[in-house]
Length: 421
Image (cartoon, rainbow, N blue to C red; front, side, top):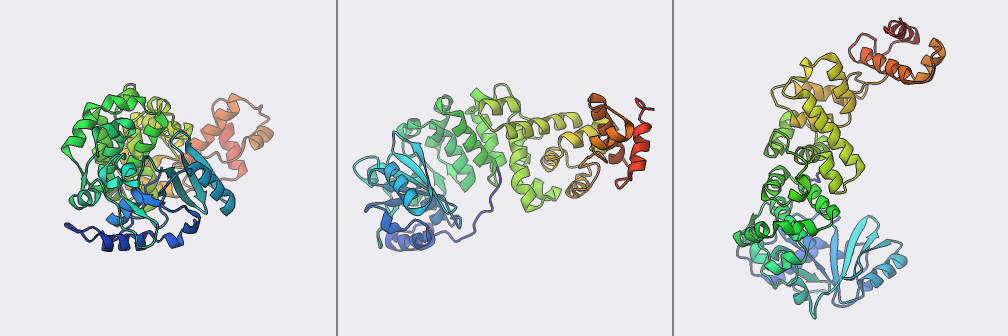
């Protein structure tokens, strides 16, 4: 779960643009199909690129190596498997019923889907939002297909559902609408918002993994904090968040400005900000219901426990044992934790310390391994040895044992530990 840098290109669609041939030529140049590792000659006549890549190309948001959705006349799964064998890629069946498969080839991802309906225009009319219902046929000099008014919606910076029935055909589209509006910086039109609110309970029928994937995408967008807050307030997540509670500060505070004020680097911001947002919105139990990875559940659990441990106090004013426990348990997630804490603490200085992998407090480690202590002190393996190693780590963290202490000093510190003294 990482934020991706947003490409910066000029939009192809200025307000009032109606030059279909010119727009199509510019879009084709930007998509650059001649550079894809998938030769167009291997695709059947009537194939087209659709959906997000078309939208993002028109908006000037197209990534250098975008995920591509292709519609082919029929037999998408068989075609995908044949292409994988021929080109040395891999094929993954995404939907056997709807004939959709993914070709992963040289780091690129191509989703191939059979056309639904008698024509590509009919297929596009079954999609979710008008800005996603455009297609560029892959034949040279072909013109952009826009049967649902996607170009006009792009020019208005408006997200509009094609129909109520289309949203209900896959209720994940209800959540996707809020995510896309946030990601694109568009206004969700009143009718679409009304449909989302009216049918919010329908999202419970969607596989939890798909819901989580949308939430993670939203958490990774620049305006994701506001978007996640809207999602929570909409009631869409009630089936999963009923056992969790949103932390303070409010999600809306977890924006790029907060990350910049804290001094996070772009790499740190890319993972810490989405993680802090997810921890603010969900708890480990909710994530388990959403079928997230155990790794994410543990990260969120540690973050929330650390946040509760601080509970409005200054980190540097915590009792030593509590501060040591905080750094030990939330070591890997500390930048995300700092985003959740009030800005009136010396958080920047703590972040600088955390960046030093040898810092004994932010990265607590025992000064030697357990086998060495067992041998020198004639100890048995067991809980007491673990407690001793923890004690020595704490002594080192707070400067009572030098970070570069030799073995004699370590043994002396161990022998001074009350249970051994």
